[in-house]
Amino acid sequence: MLLSAFILGLLGSFHCIGMCGPIAFMLPVDRTNTYKKFSQITIYHLGRVMAYAVIGLLFGLLGKSLNFFGVQQQLSIVIGVFMILIVLVPSSITNKYSATKPLFKIITKIKSKLGKELKKKTPDTFITIGFLNGFLPCGLVYMAVLGAIAMGNSWMGSFYMILFGLGTIPLMTTAIYLGRFFNGKARQYIKKAIPLFVIFIGVLFIVRGLGLGIPYLSPKPIVDLVSSNIECHN
Image 1 (cartoon, one colour):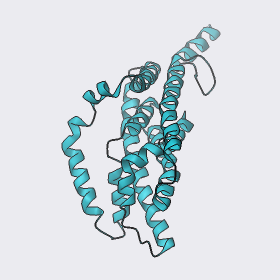
Image 2 (tube, rainbow, N blue to C red; image 1 turned 90 degrees about the vertical axis):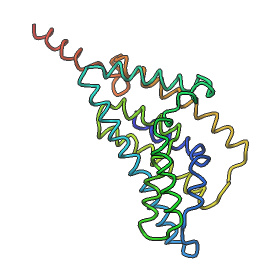
Image 3 (tube, helix red, strand yellow; image 1 turned 180 degrees about the horizontal axis):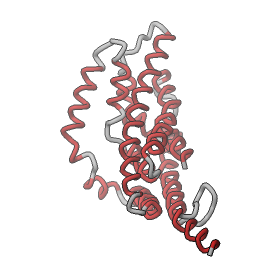
Image 4 (cartoon, rainbow, N blue to C red; image 1 turned 180 degrees about the vertical axis):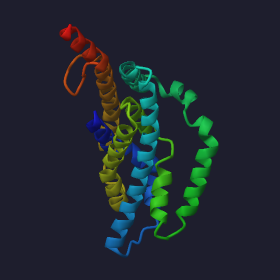
């Protein structure tokens, strides 16, 4: 399940370039010094991953809270179904219920702060830009957040989001250095693969929630295991 976070980030990098690419291209990096440029880009990515880690921690905590009600298996199934529906339901419908609308004022402030930071060249600028960038609305981040909730643990949720962030780094870094390096057809093929992979992840979460007794993939619920042990002793 954790590997799915990295792959989602890796495949979703093409979407990230479209959404966050302009910010990455506008980074006030030192283009005269290769080492300094690389370190500045690395710090920018560190800031993004830190933001994802915080998001994962918070939503992982939400998943942990739901576990107290004994709904971990059901939660995994619901999240899996929700992932699949988001892909299959037309965007014209899902856009009406955008999660960013209630947070519009906060997002506006983040964008305003980003604009100011992009004009600076101080050492802390790059980590601040990356951190703020991580909180901008993004459909793939929402998918990763659902995965973090399904982890049912704050630290695992954070780790899930960190892996997602790490997955976005290779392609984002290449884009910063080389600009547009893939032709239109290649991008279209990969963009078409992203929804299919999201559906695949959704199916994995559903299978995980069914508790089929498959090691690592779909372990039996803890309650069932305890009940079985009690029956054996009797």
